[in-house]
Structures are given as C-alpha cells and as structure tokens.
Figure 1 (cartoon, rainbow, N blue to C red):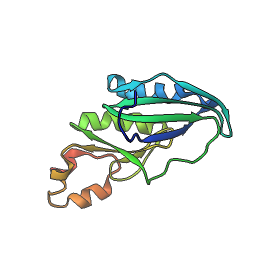
Figure 2 (cartoon, rainbow, N blue to C red):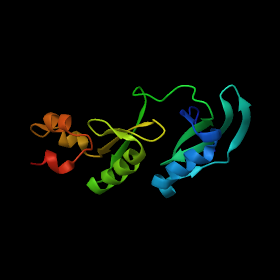
Figure 3 (cartoon, rainbow, N blue to C red):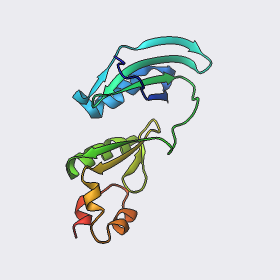
Length: 150
C-alpha cells in the first residue's frame, strides 16, 4: 500500500499488541475515509507481541505499529489536524476522540491511545481575523464556530 517516498509512522501500545484494536477504533470514526492494509505480524519483540500495517487516512499514507508494551508515549510534539466543514463535523470528531480520551485547549484533544488531534473548522484562518478571535479561542476547549461570530 505504501507508494510515497516518505510515510509517517505511528507506534501504538495496545492490549496484547494487537493491531485490530487500533484499526477498529479509527475505522469507527473515519469509516470509508480510512483504508487499512493487511496486518503484518512481527511476533515477539523487546516490546512484546508486535504487529504493523499500512493505512491511508483521507488518502494520506501512514504506517502504524502496535506493541504489547509501551515504548514511547505520544506527546504534543506531533498531532494530526482535522479541517472540518462545519460545527456538526467538529462535534462528531471531538466527541469520538474525547469520549475515551481527554479535552485540551483551542481545539486540541487526545484520543484513547494518546494521539493528539486538533479539530478545527477549515476556515479557521478567516475566523481568526475577526475582532477578539484570539480571546475567544483561548477560552475554548472544543472550537465553537458561533462564538467567533458574536
């Protein structure tokens, strides 16, 4: 499935190192916008049972790996940004990721695997040109578009 010269790789820790936990979770929100390749079982490694696969998320290729033991946690130095069409789409992603994850500030949240997401409207740049937009954003966890328009 990998056709790009460079592919981002994400390393998850799951129960028993099973890739199915990762792929099922993201399939649950991205549905037809995620293509999941065949799982490659690497077996026992220093991080316990390990599996990996290639995926495409909105046509962007990634390699994902799942290990039984945690190697390194995800942190704020890497995040995926979702550019949403409207408030309904923001709410959909925000609810899914924070249901078992947690909220942060300014549209940032953390999913159940610790991966960081920023869930924003695709026209955030225009909203940020409005008076007091920075103050509005600093008060928000989830982005509420209507708050910028008041």
